[in-house]
Length: 144
Image (cartoon, rainbow, N blue to C red; front, top):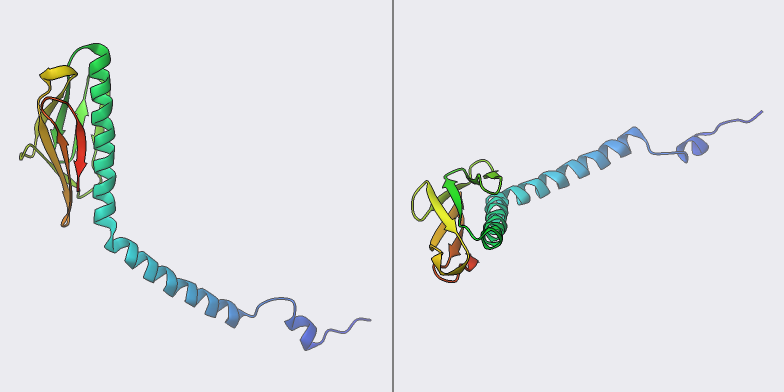
C-alpha cells in the first residue's frame, strides 16, 4: 500500500502562498506597465488619428484622379466624412481637429492644378500633429 509523505505531496505543485505571491508580483508589474502606457496614450491617439487622416486624404486624391472630379472632405472637430467615396470617420474620444484654423471646414482634394491647399491640426492633451495639403501639387504631408 503506497504511503504519501509530506515530501512527495510538496513536489506535485505550488502552494497557495506561492501562487498568491506570484499573483501579487504580476499585479504590481502590470500596474506599472499600465501607468507607463497611459502616460503616452494622448500621443498614441493623436498619431493614430493623424495617420488615418493622411491615408484617407491620399485615397481621396487617388479617387479624384480616377474620376476626374474633385472630392470634398467635410471636417468637424470630432471627425470627417466624404459622401462621394463613402468615408465617415470619427476621432478617438477627446481627440479634436482644427480644419484651416476652424472647428469645421472643407478640404477639396483634386488632381492637377485645381487643388486647394489646407491644413488640419489634430490635438489631445498637449499632443498634436499637423497635416498639410499643398495648394498646387496636392502633396499631403504630416508635420510633427
